Image (cartoon, rainbow, N blue to C red; front, side, top):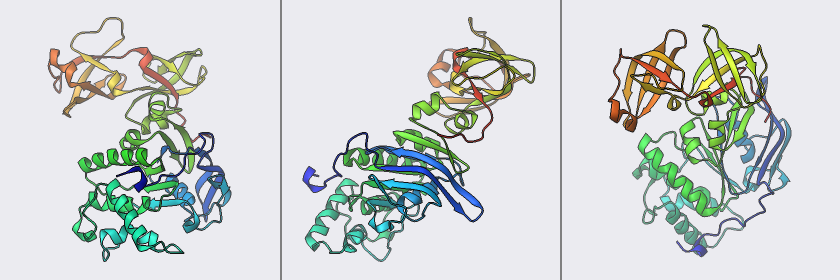
Length: 383
């Protein structure tokens, strides 16, 4: 489509957030659904709220949309406090998990519904032009007269997205919009959403419990637990520099070995496990001797070999289970002291030695710099 067919929101200074939570809490009776949220959302970014069910992520989204009002604190949109501003007066649109499309209307009528509710109502030709532009953005040209029940799940999601962007919001809220799609279609739509977001320059905020979805799509991710923000950062920051065991376990997959700090400096710590084995790892935040911690090692950082690797500490393990996943193989292994842990081996690495088999005894090893010593108190912390 031409640049004139759709006008994205005007660019704003990078220092000016499009939305903010300042000390925001929300109670439903005795339940504290959101607890002292403080967050600035940047103009034009793709941000995801990630966490398990009941962590407060949807409550945060609904307070931005105006469907819920904070019990305390302030919600800002475009520099203005909007605690009591009705949803229809906010520069925000929302795509719901189940799309909420009207089955008795055509695709074009669904997309143009919001435009027809405006007062004064835009001219008919302007509505038609904007609907055509939205259809082109979501690649549904020619579907104007289709009924919703004639569309696939992925096509219905595109219609819901077109209905949201046709109103040219400054903020687009996505409430687990891909939960009903199969894995292949979900991946395709993840790429499509990223492309649309970059093309339009609209700030996207996604709520999801799917870590892969958040990691693959987001500029930043806000990890939540028990109504609080635990850590906010880029996907790489959260994966490589988790604040505690909770974040390391929720973003990606990790093996944890619990123990007590024997000694530590600003860069490294030695941890004694309950079985008596001592492990070393990097520290991302200060730890002290006697502190209970977890040593975190990502499965892809561990190497398996039929002979010990020089220069690294090796652990003799037994293969319990092997799952071939195409580009890599997942092994569950067991060590007499360390217990069971996971190893991911790239397919390329198996070409020389061949695949390992269940029951085989091997050497597992990793570099000390690949292990992280993390606070294992998983209680949420202030952002």
